[in-house]
Length: 256
Image 1 (cartoon, rainbow, N blue to C red):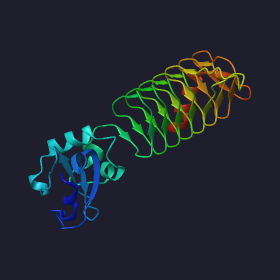
Image 2: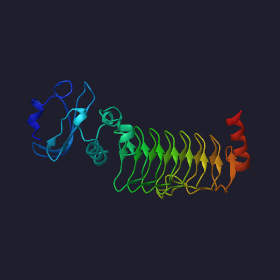
Image 3: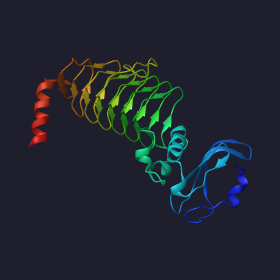
Image 4: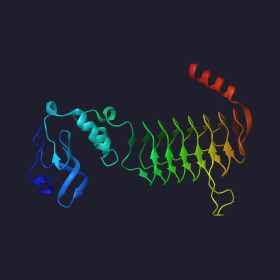
C-alpha cells in the first residue's frame, strides 16, 4: 500500500477519516504489512502483501485475520489486542499477551499462553515457559530461566543467571539479590525450585536455593539454602513448620 492512500482511505463501516496506520514492514513509501485502525468504530484492517483488506464484517476472512494477528503480536498496539473489532481479540488472538510498554531483550524465548504486563523488563537470553504471568514493573535480568505455570507479581526483581522452577509464586516486591558481597562485580543468581512460594517483599541472598515445595513468608530475609517442604519466616529466616502444615492452614482459610 502506498502511504499516500492514507489521504483518501476511510473506514468502510462508518466512513471515518483519517485512519490510523501501524507499520510492521515497509519499503520506502510502500507498506508491505501493517494495520489500519478506525478510532470511531475500533475496527482494524490488515495490510497484507501491500494490500489493505477493507471489507465489511460479513465478508471478512476470520481465519486470515487471526493468522495476521499471530504473525504480528509484538508489533500491534495494545488497543488492537484488547479492543479492536470485529473479532474479540483477547480470545481469538494468539494466547500470548505482551504489553506494548514491556521491554523484551534479544534471544529471549517465550512459551505459550504467557502474559507480560505493563513496564516489565526482560533481559537478553531469557527463557520463559508456558502459562507464565509476569505482572507490571517486574524486572527479569539476563540469562534467567522461568518454568511453566509460574506467577511473578509486580515490582519483583530476578537477578541474572537465576533459575525459577515450575508452579512457583513470587509475591509483590520480592527481591532476589545478585551479589553476595556487593559491589564485587561477580554476579550469581538465585534458584527457586518447583512449587515454591515466595511472599511479598521477601529478600533472598544471591546464590541461595529455595527447595521444592518450600514457602518463604512475606518480609523474610533468606541468607542460606532452604530445604524442600519447609516454611521459613523472620529476619534472618528460620524454620517455622512444614509445607504440609502450611497447606492445612491455607485450606482452612479458603474454606472458612
